[in-house]
Length: 234
Image (cartoon, rainbow, N blue to C red):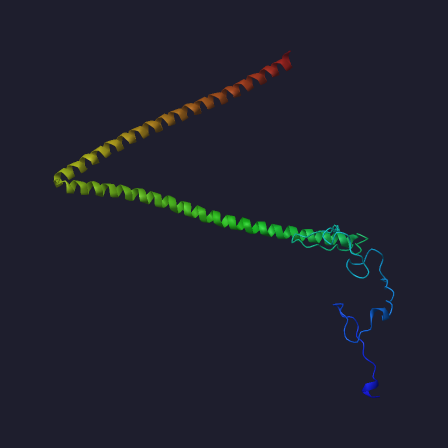
């Protein structure tokens, strides 16, 4: 067929609504087809703004949105409800209780071992502390002796710095020595008197105890004789 006898092509209306070249007039357009009804969807479930759903009045912002109550986790995400647990043990027989008892025994054994380790650690620390305490006492005695020697040396240095003659130092030494001897003698006398007083008090207490024992013996004997006389002669 030649191009001169070719019918003119027609174009549909574009989105802008302006007729194009070769478009038939509006009156000659075919009638619109029937509106397709949404199938497989219950009424009221279609999304607003689509073919199956009508636009709600007032816009989308005025629509009342209802959120179903769902459990929320600590991170803010909705948690999923898990299903029911599987079937539990129906018969609690001897093996069940033996297993339960073994698990409890294992827990108790673990706890006992833990406590025993703590006790051993405490005993070890305590023994170390006691050894340190004894050593500290010995060092304290040694420090006290060294402090006394240091005081003597300081006194000697002071006397030498004040240009005191050696004879005066010797005289002071002799005087202190005799004074210490007198104090030691007086302490011996006090100790002897105290010992004698304790011995005499001990002897006195011993005599009192002996007298009480003899008195109790005599009293028992007299009571026995009195009961014997009453039984046989009365």
